[in-house]
Image 1 (cartoon, helix red, strand yellow):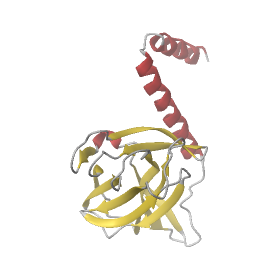
Image 2 (cartoon, helix red, strand yellow):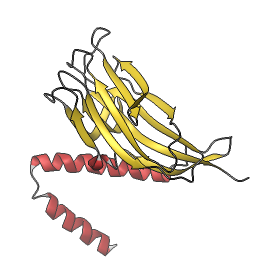
Image 3 (tube, helix red, strand yellow):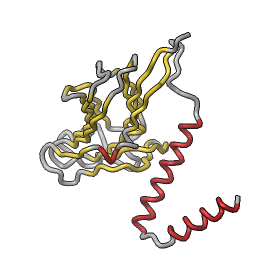
Length: 208
């Protein structure tokens, strides 16, 4: 116990020297670690009656630093980062992806998919952060593309989270390009778009 207390004291001393901006980033990272621990302690939500279980997970938040960020026209006012997001009063670890004034925001991942899987899916939630004043005349579009081909599209004008699970095409043993895209649809005001807890999940059948 004394060793743990010494570590906490050492960390506290280092924290006291951080700038305000660094403290905000540290707080966000601590929130992410706490969420990650809760995921580890929870039962596997991908266990199903059909005898499937998750055997491989590619967490897009965890691999965010490896992704590339581009704007299709002009990056003005585009913002992409990892931080907790509050939508409809519910907090989730998220990728913030506010689109630019013109054109689309593209967050691109390259991932190597294992070959020893039976099913490949992507799961995520989409939301618009609390405080945004969107309307039916001012929506934001969320899109997913795989290897350059459209997989999914959804327009949103409300702040509540919506959960989605999509089947991915046959990519087993391949290197795949996955793109998360947000589009202001001509009006980027209040487009506080966020992706909640996005993960690519490989499932295998249990031998029962």
